[in-house]
Image (cartoon, rainbow, N blue to C red):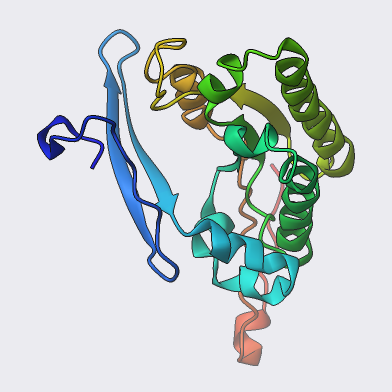
Length: 214
């Protein structure tokens, strides 16, 4: 529905339904850097992730988070300017992260992106104080997350994007190149493998031969 052949006047992205789970695979290459990379992005309903606020055990089923290099938390720009929604955004974001942490789903994930979406909705506000308050609320959320979860992630970085703006105030895809660059950073995790010599079952296998020094 977001493509030109849909014949829609306004592009639209359908929400992921509950229990529908899959991956998007994006093959990337750079002749200049002489690299090739496969980027795999998980697609799961936001309602499922929010369920960890009530039951941290459900995080065990989030296989994508257990294997992810980077976790991205989306902060809805439309809700952050809504007086009825703005106060719950910070609470829900931190409760989701805490639920994933308590459910031991973040042991591998080392990078966190906090992404303010629909930035065009904020930039279109005629009330300057409302615009500044929305951006200030997002900055406060980032600061709070860094304070609470700074020891959980090696890197926590904020982004502001407008993937499909409904106005001309921002270009389509605004901020996505920076987010993509963050996603494809090489993992800083170095796995160390320790070889353990198997214990022989028979007594003869436990006999060692002394080595004479020259």
